[in-house]
Length: 423
Image (cartoon, rainbow, N blue to C red):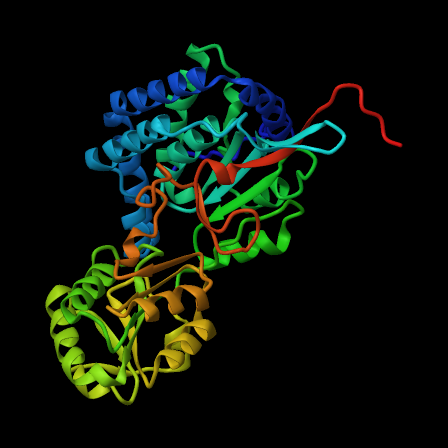
């Protein structure tokens, strides 16, 4: 790999440049932002051959380093992935621009009108592993929401990220915009992250995306507010009033379609009243779909040939692989208690035909996404209508769950008076 540890790189100066550029980004009109994004989508498509060629270098290096298959899956860029990136950017173009909208305008007794206006956050720092699509999609979301962004991808995707960055900077320059609206950090050393996390005077929010170790490191060392998403331990609860066919289909889709995703199921719970009907079907389906490894409780172990007895650690585990934990629960309340004990606040799903039971599940489970009779794989910004997502928040702050355009904004009070003074 090329040595990208440039002695001339300054994190402090990069952050200052981004702060200056954020003021430019905040003043761009909706038309100007959409024009930039369409041009970026075109540029990425037009330079797909070069991006894929650079990505091949990362794949080769990743295999030599012994990256896990999960990491390699997240790293790969091909024509289909490039088209998905450009499509995601065009979907962001189609979304309403939140900036400048005024809500809750109300007349006060003294004649003043008071409302709240959507404004950008300022400078967003993204720290992420693998996933080179994050480079393009995060930049697009930040441009549309009027923010500047500093992108620090991992060393495993450096060639891919820089290739995409070249497209972004070329478009910004061609349109007469400050290219520091999108800053790509070329230095892959950990010390750069340490320096970035100290730029509290110029960076407004840090969003880490990656493994639990990275996110804990960022959270523990940042002097800047951090959106946290440690892991996705997503639960599926099959209620005694479940439609078994729906339950099997959703279980298989949520576990096996893309097990490396953070919205894949890691544990499923089964009401004891339908164990004899459901578990034989589940065991057969999991075996046939992907030979899924099962960690089963004592009451369910006999249904799974080759299954292992589940431990407490299994119920905490984010496998990110064709592997799942299962537990038989005695009641609805038992299922709620288990989820509340082991949740990572990502996504929880109930399968039931009982409307009152589904509503109770929604009320009692406070994860960032709660679903009824649908696969957890829909817990994604694009699938939820956000166009794309810059990350997932499992911190109950201003944003919770998949973060789209509005999550990258805040509100300021706007007051219209006519000479009023306070007594």
